[in-house]
Length: 215
Image (tube, rainbow, N blue to C red; front, side, top):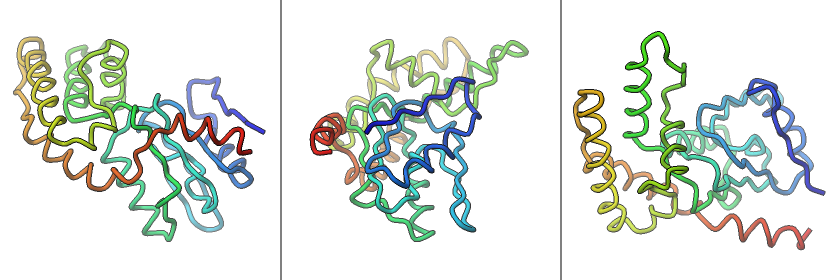
């Protein structure tokens, strides 16, 4: 049986708690969209878990957790989430799968988010300034983007980042009169992300399609 949990009140309905309860008797839990602005608080026994990007089922040791391709992934938040659970004795090794096609939130998304909010003044949107909106905008606009699968080929990623950052800097300087950012600095961070996250990156679509006939 498949079960889908959908929020109808624009967040803060307690979805994380519901998913965690369902996850206790589920083989697989999939987070299918959204970004690191989520704040799912789950309490198991006397232990409190704050999940921002990981699926709520992460705290259930027998559940496979999937971050699907419509999620925009902030690598820093994901790594911190994995390490925080590990510190509490919960390992995600072998049971966390991250879509190779999921788009990646990087520093230029966060800077673009911040600059846009500041420029709007009293009319600002009130975002969490975590780069989620600009990342989705790049995805929908079919811009030159970084996906999780790009961490597998760092040489190609470095060249891609040079092109992306050059374009973003034109926006930062011309539209907002802001300082440009360094593609090399972002690539250095991506090298660290790749080392820690590559073992989790896979074709989640194939995995999920195969899991259905397998029960």
